Length: 432
View 1 (cartoon, rainbow, N blue to C red):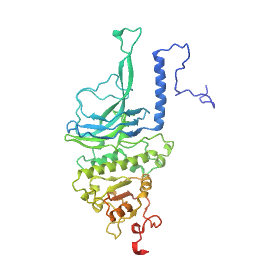
View 2 (cartoon, rainbow, N blue to C red):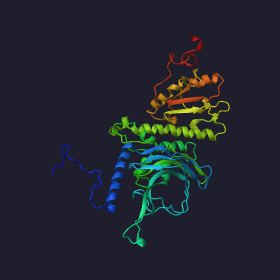
View 3 (spheres, rainbow, N blue to C red):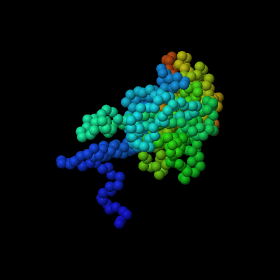
View 4 (tube, rainbow, N blue to C red):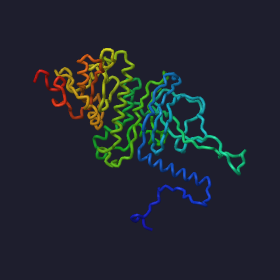
């Protein structure tokens, strides 16, 4: 027997088998079930081609109206996600999710697949620790269908509809996964997020990228590889730190990712992995969310030093500055202890950048690595000249600092064609 196929010879292994309908064929319930499974398999294959992750919505926040320290309640916005098996998980409307429950969740048929473990029953009270909130498929049934030729008093299969539903799952992360991180440190959230990004494994691979560039890295990959509660049916939505005092933070972007499809260049992982770009986007979103929460929680944000709460800066970020009634951070205080270009006190002011270039700067910066502030790596810091001009005209605007990884080529060039002389770099207004 030949162990190879001829050209144009049908290869049936893995093919989708649909029921062939024709007049006169006798049909049973099993035949229609086969047809439904063929349709589901086709949809799953399309889903796997699109990739796994969050397609839209599914933002997670505390429901301030009903949540308490002892019984937190989350609000999850409507949205759509795909898991690694290509299943679409559609949350039709904004939903409140209680993190504690005393009774088993109602369920007729458990999960769609055996690998999708149901949440354990009984009294459930979370202790201090880190938890992962995920969205996963579930299955239940609705109504009763009329039947013929069956004993009405002994029928268990006459459900009218099978509902492909959803379930939220709260998975505890073993403390040994973050035992070297101090939960009492203001940096705990940032360092835990970058453990999810796999910053340690990525940095270690730099010494020998030809041979050492793991396909899987980061805390979420580790949890999946353990073969425990987190499976390929789950889509991570948020990372939670919960203590006896209640929820300390919800960090969605530490684990949330947009759709990541199969990469045809995966054999050249170091130089061509699409995953790195998606993670860079998540790093930027994680930073902006945490920065907004720091701003809201501080009575004197203008005196805050970012390195007190953050060890890793994303490759690109926006920092709002204090301006009268507009709350913000302080220019000098925010980057205190972090090398920046140009150096403060060198006689140079923070250089200008055209705000119309910010999108291009962001896209370029996303291809670079984050910045470890403890390594004394510098970052580029710029001021959009449009906001400075608006302030000089007496308009109330929110001034900004824009930073980018020091690995990005410097954008401070003498530009006199599209920039005004008053807000150009390396030129004085009276020089012409």
